[in-house]
Length: 160
Image 1 (cartoon, helix red, strand yellow):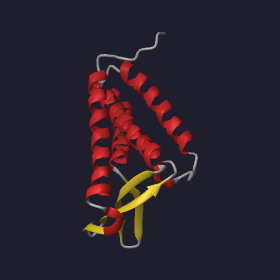
Image 2 (image 1 turned 45 degrees about the vertical axis):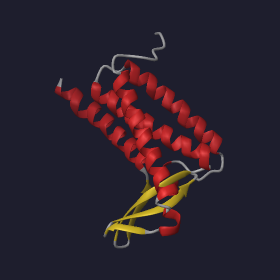
Image 3 (image 1 turned 90 degrees about the vertical axis):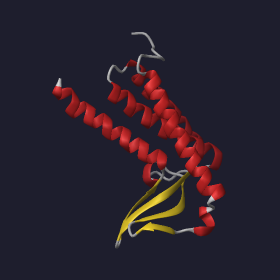
Image 4 (image 1 turned 90 degrees about the horizontal axis):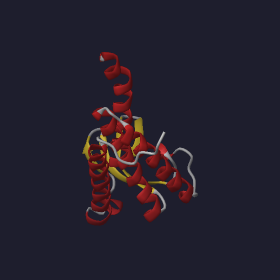
């Protein structure tokens, strides 16, 4: 089996990865440099959604808090390469789109780790005493991509 680094759905995946990466980095730049969330937080957008700044040195949702950012960056890059190869071999547009979302989000968070030493998170969902983790645009894309992959693997393939 030969290594494939481009396929018929690669442009779709690349476009979505670039869109997610760009939207994530633009949002982070705007929140940190223009809006100056650090000095204005918390900003209540709705009764259940605030904008705040949390620096996450760990993996997803602050798990595995570590100062070994180089290791996490390397893991993100390695996983992105594996997902890119999967995307290039994909024959289903939904799978390619989902993988593009995940790759774009992973690379957006990896760049944060490289530049800041942690990932910048801003969205805080809460209701009463219940509080969800703080997350960012890249995290939303990763979750959406994984959800699409699960949907595609469980529902779409059964419809064939």
